Each structure stands twice: as structure tokens, then as C-alpha cells.
Image 1 (cartoon, one colour):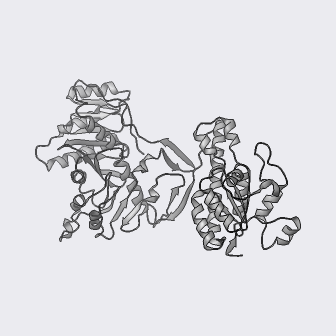
Image 2 (tube, rainbow, N blue to C red):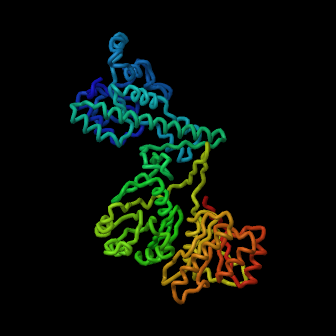
Image 3 (tube, rainbow, N blue to C red):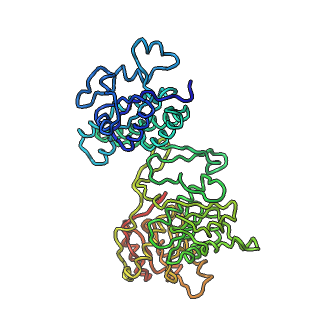
Length: 528
């Protein structure tokens, strides 16, 4: 098998002609004969590139409105025959080899996304194109297959470097890309045809599989893959400093990015085991970090800290990494942000193991939330609605308009916490702070108790701060009055919950007895 094979004969048949002219000109200049079809042939001729019409090769006309063009014994044989074993037979049959296939496919997905009618979709199911691509990919030892215009420049450069030839390594790489393209193409068509028949189906495609050190626990093997068509992916995180990310690190970074998204001002979160143990936002980034950290400074140890805005040196100096006493330095595993100033990155880089991560803010714009379970896949839209209404349902009033931003912060916080979820929040010096969480408890009373114990502990270290400045948020309705009674024991005066229980009336009456304001939102925020 030859490493470099000169491209003496190329078949070009493309739907998308982007970037095609330079490639075809390069082939022509190297002495390559170009075979072409239909609209592609017209395009090349308009640019003064000589072509041989496909009908001259097949001996048949292009027919049936272009449905039949390349599918033929002559074309497929010219692509598929083994150059080492089948040369004599090819000569006997009059088959002249095709060394390169440049082909992309009818734009089925484009018309699908345009909600085109079924007849239009059917006409945009390519048959000849996938046949050409798969044939060339199968015979990659001798044939170059090129079906993505993003690869044209590299191929042009190699053609020039190798006097019109392409190396085995490039052919092998392009072969894998070709099979992935036809697989994805068929997946889209199959799902669309399932829908046409009243069935739902989903075929996912991931690439670039990379092994991680281990999974959630050391005895588990783990990998990460990139979703092929995702505009932004956690796979693409830029690790600017520190050691390799682990499976759990990636899960925590994902939770961190979700926690700081959808808010315009400076936000900081501290993630521990998938939940925010600290969350705050305000006009000053450093103040947001200070409040987030002090929401649970003990749990923040070894956590993931994330921001939704570029980080500067004055913010990260909070960690005291240059303190002479080790106990004065704050230990974190990861810091993530959309960007870092040069000074901030230099300061953080003094910690050799600290992962410094730059992420694309567009990560959270992916539209679906998918969860794999044994032998099945769950799919849902993302939880991107904070509330349906903000309605005070008790005798005790609450000024929703004046406290609107605080309410939005609390709702955003509670939807980040694993169910059953309770959070307590407050406004302080123009910023908003998460004070306590109750996460993942089977019993809502326990979640309330955990959240308010932490809240009380936080407030004990401060002067002139009272529980009646704190608002409690629940991810789901209060099913019984005992939830309200427990909240009242801690002095909380405002509760925000979705409502919708068959016992809403009794719960509201209990609030009225105790002088507590209750706000219904109409939206539940379970997170499992």
C-alpha cells in the first residue's frame, strides 16, 4: 500500500458548493481529471474549470429529475476496486480508477428545520451521495473521500506539498469523518420518518471520546465525549492551569456554570457535591465572592468557585494564596469564569494543582436536558421558567414589586438544589446572598430544618441581622401545616412556594395564624 497516492482522477458532486472553487482549481492545476454531475458541473464550468460529464463515464443520461446520476457499475467499480489485487480485472472491464470523491449531501436537515412538507423532505433524501461517500471511505487505502468544506484547505495544502498526492494518514482521518457524516445523516432521516409515522425517536451522536482518571469512585472507569453538533460543550473547557479534570470535577463545573447563568449582574457560586453551598450576586464581583463564600465557609473548603463575568486580580486575592501562614490560605479545587485578566491568571497559576477554567457562556443555551437510565433515555426541556405568577395568598402582605430581584434570586437558587430543596436568602448592602440550603432530603421538614439551622448559624456571627430579614423558598408545595410551624419557630416571616397542594387552604390558614406572608409562584422546581 502506498503512503502518498497522487490524485489523477476526482469525482466532484456536491450540494453545498462553499469553498469548492479553490479545491477544484488546485486539482486541475495538478493535472487531475475532474468528473462531475448536474449543478456541480455547471458551477465548475462557470469558473473555467474543465470537467468530464458523468454520463460519459456511466454511458447513461442523468435521469428522473436528477434522482439517477452516479449510481452505476462503472462509477462504483472505479471507486471500490482494490488497486493491489484487482488491477487486471479492472483493465479487462474497462474501469479506470477514481482516486478522490468530493461529495456532500442534499440538505435534508435544513428543510426539516424549516418545517418543509413531506414531499420536499423526501426529495432531499440523498441516495447517490451516501453511496459515493461510503464506497470511497471503505476503500480509503487507495481513495480520498472529502465531504466537509472545512477540510478543503488542509487538503489543498497537502496536494501542493505532495505534488498532487494525499497521504495515508489523511485518507484514514477523512474516512472516519465520512462514515460519521453518513451515520448522522441517516439518523436525522430515520428520526424524521419515525415522526412521520407517529413515533418519537432520538439518535444522539458523540465524538472525541477521552478517558478520565476514573469515575465517581476510583474503581469505576469513565470517559467524556463531545456531542457532535453542540455549538458549545463542556468537553471544550479550557484548562488554563492545574491538573486534569476528573469525572466529579466535570459534574461540579456543570452545576457551577448552571448556577451563575441567566443573571446579568456579577454572580458567584461555590459548588460542593453538585449543590451550591454558596451563591450571591451584586454590582461588585469581589463582594459577591465574599458573600458566596461566607454563606457556608466550612463547606466551601475544596469546592468549585465560578463567576459569570471575567475575573480580575482584586477578586482572586480574596483566597490569600500568598499568605505566609498556610492556614490563612483558602483551599479550592477549581475556579471557573468566562475569562481572567492576565494578572489574575498569574496569581492563580502560583497554585500548581488549582484548575483554572475558562468556559463559553453559551454552554447553558443547549435546549434539552437528557438523563440516561438503565436501558432508556429521559428527555425534557430545561427548567428555564422561574415562575408563572407571584401572588401573595395570605393576609400578611409582602411588597413583591420592591423585592422583585430578591425573589428572582431565591427562585434561581432553589432550582439549582437537589430535591427536596429549601433555600433561605436575603438582601444585604444591595447584594443578594444564599444563607442556607436543605438538599436531597426525602422529607421536606428535614430540608427546612437543615436550611434554617445553617441560616441561624450564619446570622449568629453578625450584628443587627434577624431572621425576619430572610425569605425561605421551597422547590415544591408545602403539603402540611407542620412545614409552616417549623419555619415559624426560626422566625421566618416570608415563604415562597409553588402552591398546588390539596391542603393549600390549611397551609395558608396556618400562615395567617402565625402572621407569615406566603407567595405562590405556580411553578415547581424539582431537580433529581
